[in-house]
Image (cartoon, rainbow over all chains, first blue to last red; front, side, top):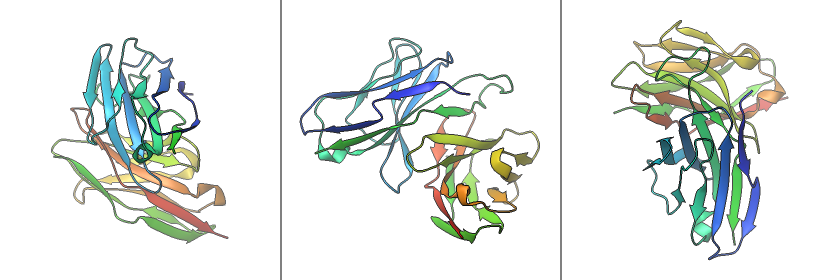
Length: 118
Length: 112
């Protein structure tokens, strides 16, 4: 059973507020990811990290920022929320398992944060 | 460049009948391929994965997928659908650079 957590699960917030979505994993995985998923649409990678102090932008441009100060923690921040940020945000991590080989790691996903900006 | 195409955005089958969710991929290298399932208001769950071992991969909940290099396909199948299979399914490709691409998803509807 994978151990990756996201808080809050649901968030309704007003325009202009600063928010941080939390993501933590207890598996010691080096790689972590943030995805954005609009209702009925595909997942888009918005940020990823290959380890502490490593952050990269994903395929979909996002106004959010991330940090990776500790291996287990990969928070996502929106400095000023807007209605266009309303979406589901999924965090994931990947790393070696008992059967995996290098470069063939599956991703473990958190339950997601459903954000609504009014 | 790699890509993944899920050929159907919606699939409807009757309970007890076979399920086929189609996925085609494009990759410059030998890819790793995955199928994930997402039930409403739940996180993603790995169904199965192909990582250059056996071409027929068995996953959880009775699902399996066959990697066909000649057809660049990785279709997901199940012999007999259950109501609890209703969900969104994502085909995912990952190459040796660890770049990961998700398909657009296929919503599976199960008719009673």
